[in-house]
Structures are given as structure tokens and as C-alpha cells.
Length: 174
Image 1 (cartoon, rainbow, N blue to C red):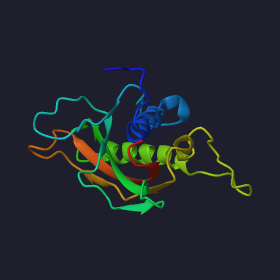
Image 2 (tube, rainbow, N blue to C red):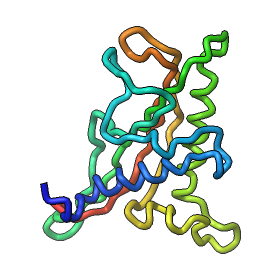
Image 3 (cartoon, one colour):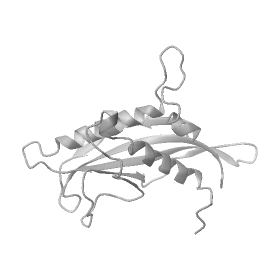
């Protein structure tokens, strides 16, 4: 594989999202250090999963959304691309065994707000480097999360899913 190649746009977006989530660290005010605990295109769930929590994974949703084609020759399109952020946390073995899943999910949502946050009054990006992933995406929508306790054959740890939908305008094949 030639590592000097420019990554395809969707892969570049996944890499930027991974870097954004790695910014969930205590010095930024978060209760977790995710600097080395974020993977992409790797599911955290299933009977054979051996990842050690807390950990985040960024994966594509199993089904594609519909695209809107543009241009005279339909060579451009505007996609709505659904990404799933999965998170697992260690169980604390109390009656509130998966409270940390709520806290980690909240940290992920707070970090994702950097994609769309603007300065009051001016409308300019509050976090220019992160705003719309530096212009790689056209929009972001954050869906409600699903937070679950450990489940046999799914995960031995509490976990959550957080769907996000990204707008991507691109030339087909680029």
C-alpha cells in the first residue's frame, strides 16, 4: 500500500473524527482520557470483543442514506452519511453499573458540538479547526443516544451508540 496517497474523503473524515474524539482528555475538562482509546472501523460489540474500557469506536451505519445528485452529468452528489460512535465503559459492579456510559456519551456529545459551535453575535466558528471538520463536511446532526447495560453475546460491559449524520458534498469517485 502506498502511504503517500491522499485518503478518500470518507476515510479522511473518519480520521478527523477520531482525532476529535481523542481530545476527550482531563486537561480539557472531561472525566476520561480517550487520547489513546479511540478506534475507527472496528466494532466494540460482540461475543468475541476483548477491548478494555473505556474505549470509543467510530463506524459507518450498516445502511447507506439516500444521496441527492447534482450537476448536469450527475457527477456530483450531496450525501447524508450516518456514522455510529460506540462507547464501552467498565462496570462498577454496583446497582448503578452503567452510569459511566452516560458520562462518556455526554463527553462525546460535548466534543461533537465543536463541529457546529459559533460565536454569539458574529456567527464565526468558535473552534475554527474543528468547525465542520475544517470544511470537510457541510452539516452535522446528532441523534439521541442509546445507552445499554451489559448483555450476553453483545458486550460484557455497559455501552452506548450515538448516531450522527454528516453532510458531505463530493464529486463521485473523488
